[in-house]
Image 1: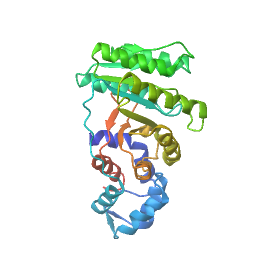
Image 2: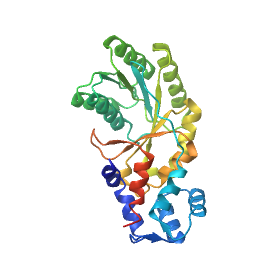
Image 3: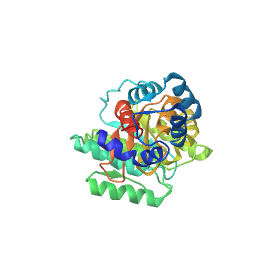
Image 4: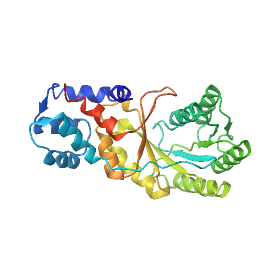
Length: 286
């Protein structure tokens, strides 16, 4: 898995190496420049550097970075069906992330059903339907402009009837500042609870990694609307802003569960603080 993390952080590593030639130790000034270039928040960078003793070695930097990441206890998922609501802004990679999650569940021997709750865009339903066919997963959908809450209810009802292990429900890509869509999202959550007590069991926010730290305020607004249980950060393989992970995790104090490493259905990595940090630190040292 460490090799996948290194691959995902490829562009971040290139940007860091343009500032710091790989060596056995580095100065605080060069480290600061490289971390800011990787889109880590200035306050986090200063807090980190204040704790480090020069010359900064690999072990010292790795330990310091790990201290920046909040510790989260893994949550056991025992519900059946496990209902997961996926949301985020347009272009963040929601639909592809749903496909990746479905693939993971299937690979683990679990039965999956999808709900195409983004009834706002016909293309969104079509895209998810293509993934469902490709993965051999049933899907519940409605006409464009249909009631997304109804799709959520029907998806859960179908999951119960089929005895499915995992129900994944898509939602319309929305800006957190759009009041009507925000109210719609609240309604979907309420309806999920009516279809099955305790649902949705996980509300997963998908953030576009190419936005870096600018996604933090977006996430805070979503959290205020319906509460976020976990985060998936996509497109990290296509950006030099890998350092933003530390700022996002610390600012939000919400678990980052997954990072996207490509466009394929298999390109989703469990976020592990130690492995991510080891891969990130590889960019600095020989």
